[in-house]
Image 1: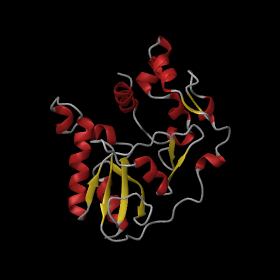
Image 2: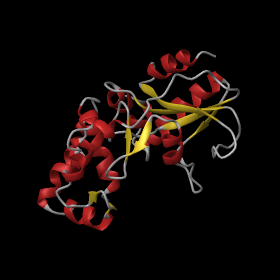
Image 3: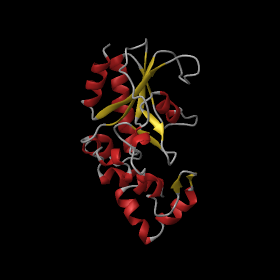
Image 4: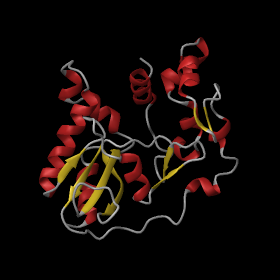
Length: 216
């Protein structure tokens, strides 16, 4: 199967291929073959999700159920197996898989940064395909290496995200204040500060949904 066909079929479902790699010793895959990582394709992902039956039926976890249906259908059509970052424990190591793909890196603030999604990167699932597909070349290094000033390092108003890692209590404490309303309604300022994120096209409504789940 041509890799371009996978990209085109995913795009038709408002998903983008965020990386892929071959299985082998140390790859951490539940089988051999080629793992294809999928994430939101922007613009257009959020309108597709909120128009879906999963979003409209009022039941819990609409985004995860949408992902399971759409990626499960794609996997079946490709003759592969769908894998998801939810539904555990145990959980699949998507962070590790993302870095292994060569299209995402550990950013200066320790969050993943992706070549096209920046710090807004998220993974809705993956498809494990039989055989070794021919894959496109990967970038030589992280875009952070050439990012002037690395604005993500100074973007957190609570000082919760920086080179030393993530202070989760400080983040939640700030979100409980009036000053934290911007992060809750528009998304994490650190993620928004990334120049690549700013060109990704993710809607504030999607970020607000995820922030609402994060800060319950």
